[in-house]
Image (cartoon, rainbow, N blue to C red; front, side, top):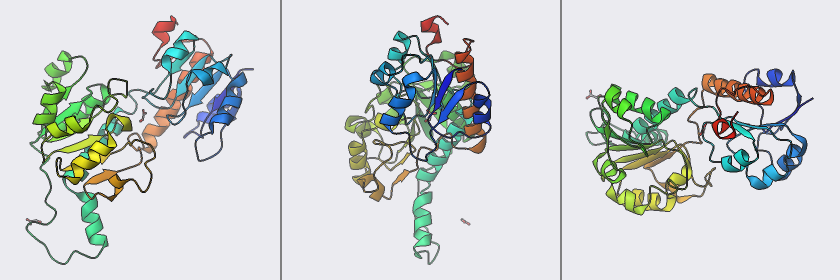
Length: 324
Ligand code: GLV
Ligand code: GLV
């Protein structure tokens, strides 16, 4: 019987589906599986269903000689050494597409909340400071009709663009490769990163974390943005240099930021970013709806089971390189 390790309890009937066909070990705790436990458990595993909080690197793979499939319940694979998996013939599955809508919704929710100062307004009311209506109370930045800049025009970026168009926004994008088909379909305009930062009222990051995008938004990049601009990160924390962001928010170099992801993650409660009224942070909730998390768990299980049966996986990031 094949052995499967699952690093977290999953939504829906995922466990029942896996259990039928294999010997399954599920990490039962609310915190991520400790590294040493994961190392022990993968020793005889054929399949691994992991989370974005698990680091799947070459030293771990060294300890997993029978591993055939790594299936992550996420679209991002920056926590996985995909090259090391490919070298060992290990197929890596992820969960694209099913989370596009939910994650794009979150980007817009954060954009609206930061631009219209919703968390600040709530704090104001809760603290009993709301005494009267005032013509200049908590004035924010306009969203409709403004210019939206999307860094990373993949599947999620495209969904964010659609939503921006619904708000009557002019949509600029930057991407490693230009996307003429999306330009033709949606009327989005390609810009270099510097141009996009300078022209946009709202900048949304929806690119993967790679060596090229690590601290892509640093002091220089923030300096190019407008003092009225907002920055929204729904991608991965390390794309933004947090100390440079803190400085830019503190000095009014940009208007506000909203982060669904941080560096480090989780962000410590005493991080100075949390003390800034113009910085909104939520705990990596981009795909966190009942429907989407269930769809992600289902797809992660589909990938795992197909991979272990030697069948085509519904979503695989390296199968074309392994030739399966
Ligand atoms: C979430 O961040 C994901 O990569 O699915
Ligand atoms: C706002 O509530 C207004 O009536 O202008």
